[in-house]
Length: 69
Image (tube, rainbow, N blue to C red):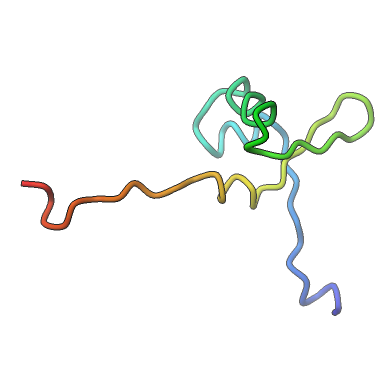
């Protein structure tokens, strides 16, 4: 498979992940600590997150047909 047809994984910072989810950085760190997200360490300090995992973290809320009235 060539690089042109392989989807590229995008790793983002904890701050960017928090902004993407509209939560705090502490919340993202808690998701990592609980195993809900995978954190990838680069060197001794930098942590990155696969952006696709953020999308998988979101789940739709079921709605009642007819608007619930």
